[in-house]
Image (cartoon, rainbow, N blue to C red; front, side, top):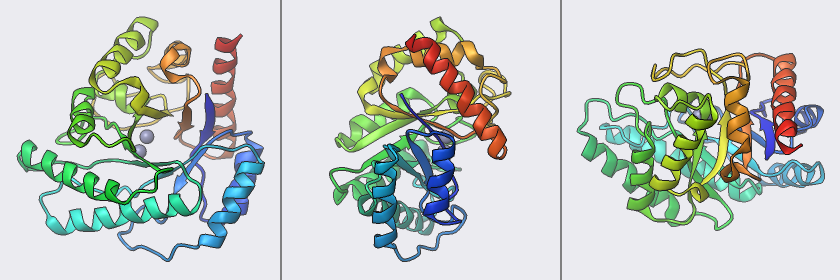
Amino acid sequence: MRLGTHIRVTGGYDDALAYAQKLACTGVQFFGGNPKTYRVGAIDVPALRRFASARAAAGIDPAAIHTSYLINLASEDRKTVVNSLRLLKNDLKIAAAGDIAYVNTHLGSYGKRDRKDGFASVVASLEDALDDIDPNVYLVMENSAGAGQLCGGTMEELGEFVRAIGHPNLRVCLDTAHSWAAGYEINSRDGVERFFDLVEREMGLDRVVMFHFNDTQIELGGHRDRHWHIGEGNIGIAGFRAIVSHPGVQGKLAILETPGEEEDDARNIATMRTVLEGVAA
Ligand SMILES: [Zn+2]
Ligand SMILES: [Zn+2]
């Protein structure tokens, strides 16, 4: 697998790249802009081009953008959907300009809305975004922890989106902490096998192009989104070992979104690398 962590690019792409190199990342994820505003800034194409060449030279590929946390394509509020779609399309443009293969997004929450209407709204927005997508960029739906009316908490629902939209550039990211919180028992070989069988049946494992590897202390099916250090939560080393041993994940991108600062990132990457090497050996 390609392995990396979510990095900050607010200090500039040079610093971000240096950080990723220090951790010996072979893939990377970052925010395209400020994740807490609907405002869209100008796209600095030359800077993105330089970042792309430097990443390629450093062997850090593929890269992923994580969209803003404000994105809600399922909202009953029209303005929220319009603003969300603008953010998503802007990140797709950044990705096209900067050789960034994946734009990973949360879908949002149905709120008080009827699920059928919310589902249709998400489909319409994703279709709109995919209409003029660069052929080398993939729009990646991330599974949610399934809290409340959150969209995309089950493999069945993600599969429904995949089938309803049927676009080759629509892909899926599975976050391990969200999967566990949604009730998928991925802490053992049997559990992981069952989970990936379900993924295969609902959308095909080929649709899954990336993973977020996060452990979690939330109970199974707890529907809460709390990330924890690799091997120090309920998924545990056994769970991650089972996941990376599966043929369906080979060669794909794994991004850590674990908490803490540099020493935590270094430790989590090192732990994950040890797991990967143990499986490859
Ligand atoms: Zn996410
Ligand atoms: Zn995630």
